[in-house]
Image: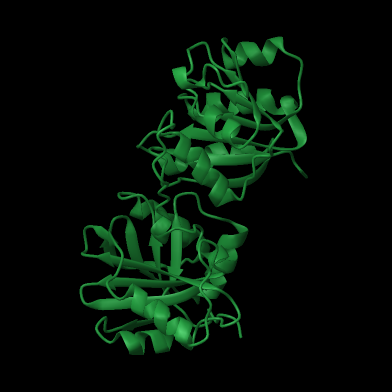
Length: 342
């Protein structure tokens, strides 16, 4: 039996701290009666719906929000001290034919504290009840959030959570060879949007300096053309997979014949309209089945309006494969693009 979302009218969403109202605006577009129940802290909010969660999840899958990073339905609330009963109730909801993982979070109204003391006991109870753990790629997620002595618990298919990380907190292992923090943005975009960098393929990195995104693409086995008048990080100088073109993105695109790049990326610090112009100019360089990734630098004021406007313009020229204000973004949103029909 599959997970039943019917009748659920409460769920937890997570966005960047301070963007809770933007998240409510996005939900209200899909569910006009959505309203705050309470702010949990760390950008997480408990919301009440005017219609059941299953209807909302279907709409979100068809029209994903930009600023909401994670969503978790709430099937019931319980006493955190009665762990065995909690696990037993979860077993009545879970899909026993699908693998699972428990995502546990704790809140104090202002901050989030990852983890929950009884997470392992809940997992053990589910395993004893016949559910199989899914490791790093579970089919369903058990969400357990403790708030002021109450646990809000729910089960959902992983595809319905918007992110595989608890609360969308995409944290990667430290890498001593990392060139810049921006690498995490491209890595998270690949995970969230389901992108694959083809080994042996060709990539074009526009505005590449200091070379973080070029390093990620090269590490995936791609041959990278890194375009930037500024120098790349010294560690990339001898990397034979990366060819550095010391010129601007505009001059490169004007002076070269369109190529067949499988991946084109742009993390340049410029106004959204200029970034859009660069991606449109680069479109002839994109292979038929290739994709692009661009970060749109948003101003704190009116950033929802600016993001929606930018995505609307991009839709006129591309298929939007994904648009999200990622955990590793700051005041920006990352968009994945493909040719229309490809």
